[in-house]
Image (tube, rainbow over all chains, first blue to last red; front, top):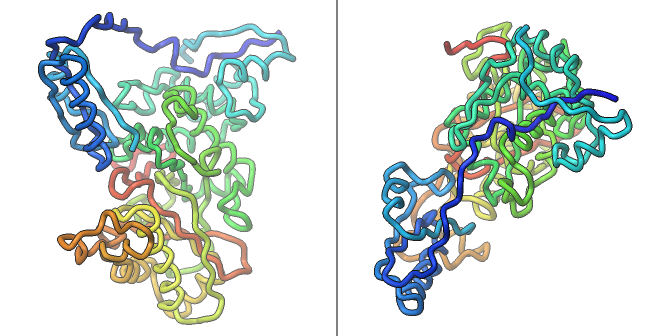
Length: 92
Length: 348
């Protein structure tokens, strides 16, 4: 037998719980955080239309990160706390 | 020494490789078993306490300790004398301006290129000659791999997980080069040019796309050599990314002779490339990118370098051959090259 050490960060990672998923989007406020790349504009515009017309979403809030390679800035995270659902991230 | 905090696992001698493969803790190559004794030897050589924070990855807010970095360095095959270089490399990639989260998660698929300068190169037997960009010796391969395993095991930079590279390139497995500092004046080592005091070793980390090899063996005019280099940089700007940032260029002895004989310093090389590596938006039309050219932007000028000092000029390669390598940035200014001292903080 040999003793080896765990090379991962796993044991020190902070655990967190996922929230329950909403059962309906009717009347909800839904946020979209775009990474700002050009192709996200028509994609998220189409998604916003679907959310409003087919899923009964009351308001779609579209925001764009200032740097598409970095996480959303603190102000956007704080604003997202008021949304029922958030869409974030399109690769390209 | 403080006690180690990592979870220990008892495993049959014959089961080590399978354990690490099953847990996703290896890049696929065999690993060296990270026993407590081997990890302690790493830490002792560097004089690092296990809980010393080498760097903090700011997105996950994870403090990467010397102990965890050492475990991964052992895995990668490093020997204790390699460890101070690994520590410096991890320090560099954790600096905010390197943007390690973006660089390692991006679809752009860059790798971390490490350039080692100073006396540690000879102490570790690192080679700057033949096949310098492809892991020419044990220390280069193991140090580069150690950083890759740190990213993999401590930050989940695994293909399909955090690593969303569309293609990636072979340098992602391990990419560490020692600059050829003995190759002739008036060229200064990269570390020296970036502010490292004489006699101090350093590591420069650069989020780099794959190298593009060029050749010009038919001139003794340094401007003509650089015209070839600039043509490749301009092609990269059009075919890949137009945004300005750090670029690296590596020159082997044969081409350096052209510069040395003409009295051109690295600064002269940088200025020439800054002046000439320029394209216009309209140039995108001839490479199939007409959709992003408009009457409003077609005359906009783009430079490869925000300023001359953004070009990393590196000496390395075998003695014969008029080849140079252009190493583009991951994505313009998103990530900046960072230099860290080995075993010393020269900026503190």
